[in-house]
Length: 112
Image (cartoon, rainbow, N blue to C red):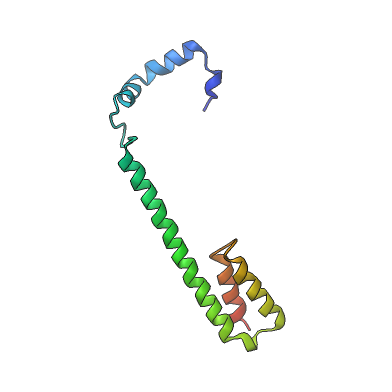
């Protein structure tokens, strides 16, 4: 898309004439191809985004608890390097890579 500050006045009028119906519909607050600025649409979008974030959070919490359980269960069989790496990854999973870190910990614990 062209930078809006680079349009000349004749180009703006030409674009207005080409998109007159959509612009008038928007000004009159009519729906344009299933798009509207109503509060219901914003609420639905926000709600669906929160649900996705909640599902990802629950999945990562389940993976973290599972990784912690397996790490503690196999603690005596892990080498000191793997023990340290598992603990560091479990701590870092709350800061970065919340789904990947517990999976790496599970792989480390199961391969011992």
